[in-house]
Length: 78
Ligand SMILES: [Zn+2]
Image (cartoon, rainbow, N blue to C red; front, side, top):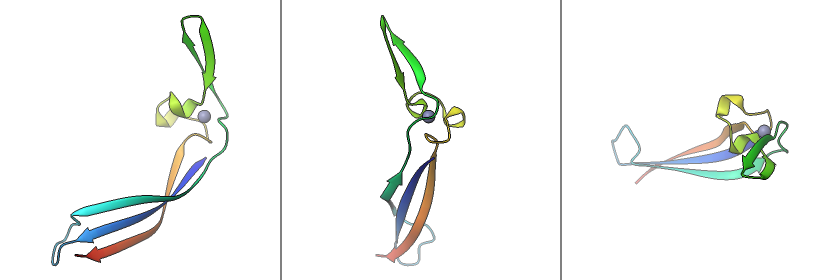
């Protein structure tokens, strides 16, 4: 599983309910090699690439499927 640790910063105008700016910062990424590489053909060339680069999210292997963990949410009024 690819795990992305993300820090979210939300900037609010005074008295506003919704932020006018949201910044996502990736703090760390943990991942392993693809468990089910996909064969790709281009003319005579054949190569295997990670399924995360080719398949939709629900068909990706355990290692390629991203998992986002929000570690911290900062709320700033500016
Ligand atoms: Zn994969």
